[in-house]
Length: 392
Image (cartoon, rainbow, N blue to C red; front, top):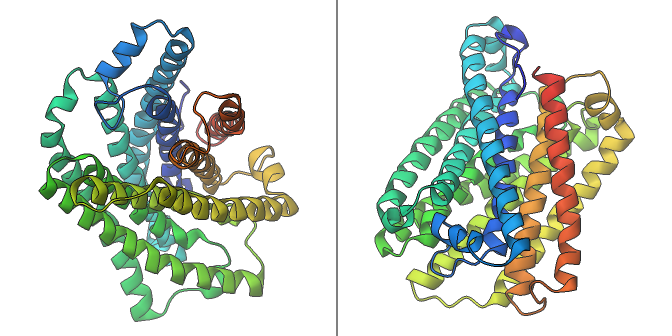
């Protein structure tokens, strides 16, 4: 794919993990086509068997879409794994440096939350690959859900340990520089908890065993609730500092971190409602899902417009994307693109199609998909561009 730099030492940053996170997110964008545009009535997600039926059918357009999506999933899964291994190796070297000791004594310690965040994405990528490329896997999925939850539990424990070490230090010592908190970088911890929460929600929604579903439900809600209360705190503190000091130029991209946080927590809440619907007797109407998704999409659009306006005025794109200035934090540009695309697919299919407001495969349906495809292409271009600029 491309040759990566090695042994960055003091110049490494844990935010480089966001490069692997972005590649994993790209896998999810291609999976959305298969999830919502190919038939799989027997299973909640597409599988090897459902895709085989599509490829053996007579719908040429759907077959072409399926092949393209599968190729994209394979390509970006390999890229995700390569960047994950590279980051783990570089992080091990970084831990031996004096810069690491400085990081864990400052506000920047929150950057370590990018590690469990990326590991949680790796579990999701593995689940997608298993479902799509392993014949007959879904027949034993009820045995796999507990293993997936164990993997998310380990990742969640790692995230909690990093966060508690950080927060206990600043609460005991008071060494949190509020004047340098003039951005939303601290929301990275909320993003990590939300990613773990949405991971647990998959088992809650898709398992037919009440005990498995219930355990996933409880654990997902625990992480989503923690993310919610922390988000309220970090959001107020961040905006308080930004209003007083102005936003930090290099970290201005953090304004967009709200977008992926909204996506992962929103999808988790939707899955939990499906768990209550399928396994615990609570009937959920499609209009309720549309209402939830509309509220979440509205918040995303607000922060998308606000963040773009601020970064444009600061010349962020000219400097850190197209220009010569380099910042590992610029990899955070990829996550909002992926998250907006995924939320768009849920809004169209679960919200509009699910309520009967939009007919699937109609002209209006494909018209609404066009901006999402454009967003996906722009996001993938940004990913390759930043990889080439910062990693080679």
